[in-house]
Length: 114
Length: 117
Image 1 (tube, chains in turn purple, green):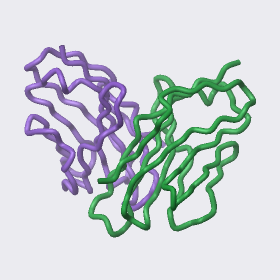
Image 2 (tube, rainbow over the protein chains, first blue to last red):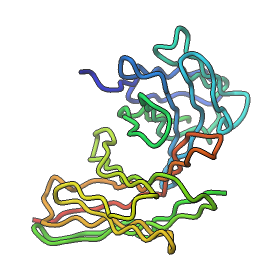
Image 3 (cartoon, each protein chain N blue to C red):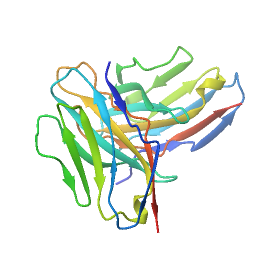
Image 4 (cartoon, each protein chain N blue to C red):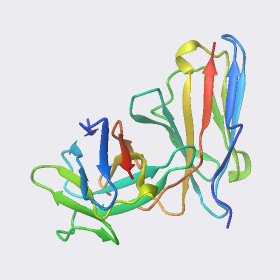
């Protein structure tokens, strides 16, 4: 069974440009999460989808970030326009159930804004 | 607010020895879930062990065990008979219980563990 996959694995963009990250969750997992880790700090929650609906987007830093999950399958996270402080590793995770179950993580996308 | 603290940024241990990674957390909830995740170099995070707060018995998975002290809000991970493959970044995480309106994980800053040959 394929795990959670994320594309690209690395991205270097200039300040002001747009970047779109993609996450393919494990098939059948209704719950999809985005997290971000800034260098040396904790992994922080960004948002949570249940199927195609946003269950919790309390962690989204500002309106330059837009997440979608059309059809309840893969998800995209767009940053437009990117700023220097957006640099970090973006993780996607999926889970089958809601409460207290294991979340399966992707390898992450390392985003560098220069 | 719920927080998770890992006070050891880096640790090392000799192969075959035992090491303990510390984690403390803060919450006002009575029921919740705690996790240790491991991220090997250039690999994805995988679950090491999971503990439900309402269970008093400490979780164990082969060489990995936890010391869960609910009153002290402490959740340390013990790795016995350390192997080179245990070299990784270890993250402690908290997930709220049924009374919370959120399902997100709250992570600590991680402990980088290096197992020495």
